[in-house]
Amino acid sequence: MKKSAPSPVRPTQRAPSAQEHPLAAEVRPGQSVELLKELHILTREGKLNQDSRRKLKQVYHLYQFIEKLLQELPNGGAGATLADHGAGKSYLGFILYDLFFKNLAGSRIYGVEFRPELVQKSRELAARLGFDRMAFLNLSVAESTGSEAMPAHVDVVTALHACDTATDDAIAFGLQKTANFMVLVPCCQAEIARCLNASKALSLSRTPLAELWRHPLHTREMGSQITNVLRCLYLEAWGYKVTVTELVGWEHSMKNELIIARRTGKPNRAAAQRLRELLQEFGLTALLETRFTLPADNETPA
Image 1 (cartoon, rainbow, N blue to C red):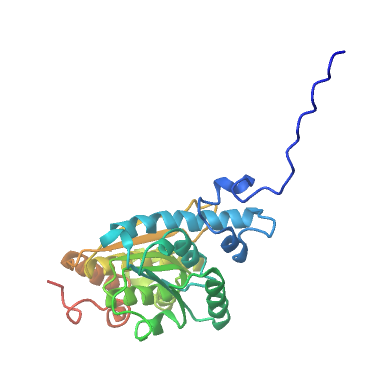
Image 2 (cartoon, rainbow, N blue to C red):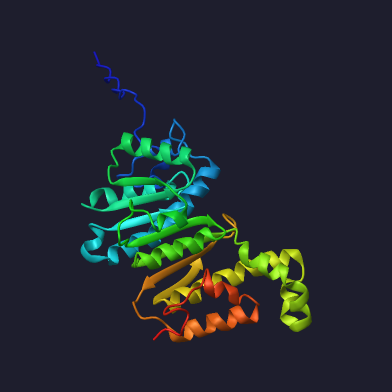
C-alpha cells in the first residue's frame, strides 16, 4: 500500500521583530526602536505615518551632515561635545546620541531648551534609555553662553529651527566656545524685517532697492534673506568657512536653509568689509554694536 507523503511542518507563528518589520529600511541597523516610539516617530505597533516619515527624513538628512563633521574631529569624534540649541523635544540630540555618540567614550551632548516641561521629559527619557552622557539645560540660548554648566569649549553647535534671534545667539555661543563647526537651520527671522519696515518710507525715497521690501510679504521674505546673508558674512569675518545648502526638499519644509560653518581661525577682512557695507546700505549699522560685533571692537580684522 502506497504511503501518503508527510504533511509539511508549518512554522510557529510569531510577531515580526523590528528588523523584519516593513519599516526596516527606515529604522537604521542598531537604532533604538524604543527611542523612536518614545519620540512618537513610531507608533506602539511600530508603524510610521506620513508626518513622522517627513520628520524622520529631515532629522536623518541633518544627521548625515553632522556625522561627517564629527568624523573630522580628532579620534573620529571620541570625546566630542555637541550643544543643541532650541532643542525642543530633542529629536536631533537623541538620534545623534543613539546613532553616533553612545559608542564613543567621553562624548557628550548638551540640549538647551527654555521650556522646563520639555527639559524634564528629555531628562526622564535619557535616564530610561541609559543615555547617561546627555545633559539638558533649562536655559535660553543667550543664557547658555554664560552658564557654568557648559564646557569652555564645544566642538559642534547645532540650532535646528531656533526662532528669530535665537540663531544669532547660537552663533555668539559658538564663537565664545571656539566651536569647530556650527550647523544652523534658521527660522522665523523677524528682527531685520522689523527694521526694514520701520525705515521703509526713508528707504523708498533714498534707493530703488527699497521696492524689494515695499510690500509686507516681501518685507518678511527680504528680511529673512538679508538676515542669513549677514550671518554668513559675520561667520566668515570671525574666521569660519561657510557653506549654504538645502536641508531637505521644499515640499517637506519651508524653513529649509542649512548653514554649515567650519572654523579656520583666520578672520576674513573682506567679509567684514562687505558686512559693514550691507548694513549701511539697508540702514542697519546699529547692529554692528549688537548682533554683528566684529573682531577688535568693530575694526577690520587682521
